[in-house]
Every structure is written in structure tokens, then in C-alpha cells.
Amino acid sequence: MSPSPCLVWFHRDLRLSDHPALREAAAARRPVIPVFIWSPEEEGRWRPGKASRAYLLGSLKQLEKDLQAAGSRLVIRKGPSKKTLGELIEEIQAGAVYWNRRYEPALAERDEKIRTTLEGQGIEVRTFNASLLFEPEEIQTGSGGPYRVFTPFWKTCRAKPEPSEPLPRVRKIPSPDRWPRSLKLNELTLETGKEKPGIPALAPLRVGEKAAAKRLKAFLDRAISNYAEGRDRPDWDGVSRLSTALHFGEISPRQVWHAVKSWITTASNRLAKESANGFLRQLGWREFAHHLLFHYPHTPARPLRAEYEKFAWRDDPAALRAWQEGRTGYPIVDAGMRQLRETGWMHNRVRMIVGSFLVKDLLIAWQQGAEWFWATLIDADLANNTLGWQWVAGCGADAAPFFRVFNPVLQGRKFDPEGEYVRRYVPELKKLSTPHIHAPWKAPAKVLSDAGIELGKNYPAPVVDHAAARIRALRAYERLGSAERNPIQL
Image (cartoon, rainbow, N blue to C red; front, side, top):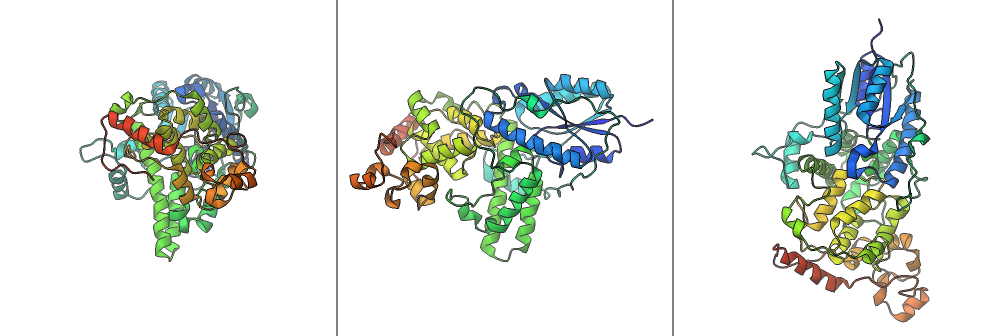
């Protein structure tokens, strides 16, 4: 009698390498049926935005090809996960379901309910960690609670054994005699819907596991040795651009970790090694974000620091729309917001700048920024998005102090000194001379005229005066009772 089939339920782990659920199923010498279930409503308020769905479609297409090369295929269904898995189990008489765990609160709760139900029916269930270096509940303070400050969190992580080596690629997957029915990818309607904004130009992006591996290799070859500086320069190609691949599981954090560690062992330059270790620290911040979301599941919508629930945010639809559309009159802010709309991605330094501008200069609630990023980022990740916005608003764990107000002009001059990034995404300013590129409203009339710029017509005047807005923000925060001496701006 042949063994019963095993379902491998794919989530955000769209790869064949370092995929413990798939590898264990394939090694069990039983038919394996990979399945993807489209059930966005189960993610509640944080179902994938349009940009993320567009990327997901491309990644699933590549996964289909990779599975076919391994002698398998991807069964696609949509509908409630519990019901859909039950139907598949009955249809093919499956005896086991394996999957890699999700850690977002709604999905972790869903998966636990499914596990309990299936095991109660006599179905073997095995789940694995494939998306984090450490399990969130395993990292604890001395008193046994969760961390709220990054440095001791990361120190505890580094004191633990090294993350395990990534598993090799599954190259042959046992197939069943009969395949269950499957939807076509276009039947999932991942690209439909009328919500704004529209889908960014994703065609030039390379998606899938092999593309992610090439991206990592390119980063190690050209940029990691200068990452300490390059990570802050949006005008350079100085970052890994792996956030999307990590979110969709086209590459695992273990693969990235060990590739970087291997690079460090062969590097001879001390500063280059320090730079690479700085990149590993950024993987630590990703871990910290998931640690916080796991232990504080309310934080995507509410501040971790409860006193900030009373903050008097402004309701200013016109200013919010100007920010969303990249029409604030501050070039570095506008460049970032336009990069986001055009490509579905934004450089991390610029994410902090535009976030500070929304929260501090415009006094618009961080939740509105988080929701916009969620709708427009292809790498929209609930843990990272929440950590970033609560950091910039000063209301989360290890947050920026309330008096840290990013000056968009100074930030532009420091991190885009020649204005190349601004000119790339704000073409109206392409001919403006470098000394004036980050503050065009201060340029002499003749300089503006020679560059073909009419403030208020073909490029907006600033929607707010930064100096006045900074004072307004500090007063608002002080009224909350969080006053500090010696306020600074960066």
C-alpha cells in the first residue's frame, strides 16, 4: 500500500532552497503536493496591498516554474484556508500537512487553529521556522519578558548558538499518481481592484529565488564592503535590495546570514569586515521587528507607548495628499514619495526622512503613513512597517526621541550631496544647480528661471515652513508630557 500524500502549504516561503517543510516532506518518500491558498481576508486589516499583490503574482509564476523543474507543480486554491485544506485532504486522502510558520498575529492564530483541528482528525501536522533567525518567544529578558530595546535584544541573540546552516535546494519532489484540480494564477485576481494608488512599474524587477540569490551575490561583490556609508546614500547603489525577497521568502535570512558570514571570513580589510557586520545588525533589526509584533500584536494600529494614544494629531487631507503624491515642495521628500509610487520601493534613509516629515512637520498620525506604505510598498511587511513608523513617531520600542526632527534640507544635502537622487525622481528640478537643489525656494529668481522652474506652478512651494513646523511639533510633544532638554534636529 502506497503512503498517503503530504500537502506542503506554501505561505511567504516561495523558494525550494532552505525550505524545511518541503525538504522534510520530500525526504519522507511519500507523494508531495505543494499548495498555495489565496485567502487575503484572513489577514484582517492588513491584507496585501496592490503593489505587494503584483509582486506576489510574479513570484508565484516563478515558483511554478521552479517546481516544474523539480518534477512537481503548484496547486492553487482560494478561499478560507481551513476549509480549503480540509477539501484537499479529503480529495486526495492526504495524511499529513507541513508548512513553515507565519508570525503575524492574525495568521499565527489562524494556523494554530488549523493545526489543532487537523490533528484532532488524525492528520499529521508539522510546522517549521523558515523566515527568522530566532523564534520570537525564545529571546527573553533576564526576567523572562520580551525586549523593548534593540541593543540588549541583539546582544542576547548573538549570545545564542549561530543560526543553523541553510538547507540545500530540493531538486526532486515525489509526485502523486493523480493531481488535484488547481486554479490558474490569473484566476486569483491579484492585479484587480480599484483602490489607489495604481500598480507601480514592476516589469523591470527580477522576481523569484534565483533572482534573489543573484541580488545577494551582486551585493557581496560590489557594495557590502562600503555598506556603512552606502546604506545612507539613496544616490548610490549601496544597499542589498533584499527586503522584498526576504518578505516573500524568495531567500531566507539564514541564507543571507551565512553568505555574509562567509564573506567576512575571507575579507582582509578591517573596515570592510565592520561594514559587513553592520549589515548583519540590520538583519537583527528585522528580527527585533518580528519580536515586537509577536509580543505586542496591537502595535500595527496603536502605539506601544500608551501615552501617545492621546497625541493631538492634525487632520489635514490636503497636506496628506501632497505628501502621498510627492508635492510637498521639499525635494528629498518628494523624490522619495515618487520613487515609491513609480517603483514600489524606497531607500531606507529616505523612508525615515519622509516619515519624519509626515509625523513631525505635518503632525499627521503615523498610522496614516503606515497605511500608505502598506498600500504602495512591494516589500510591505507588517513587522518592519510597524517598527519603522513607531520609531519615527517616537511612540514605539527603542523609538527615536520625540525631539529628533529630521530637517529635509540638511538630510538632502548630507545624503544626496550632488542631487542625483532628487533629479532622478523629480525631473522638474533636473536643470537646477546643485547648491539650490534641496531648497529651490531659496534660489535667486534668475537661477530658477534659467532652470525652467516656476514655484507654485511646475514645482510646488513648500507646504509648510520647516522651522515653524519643528517648533509646533516640539510644543505638541511637550504638551503630551514628554519634554526633554536641548532638542535637536538632524
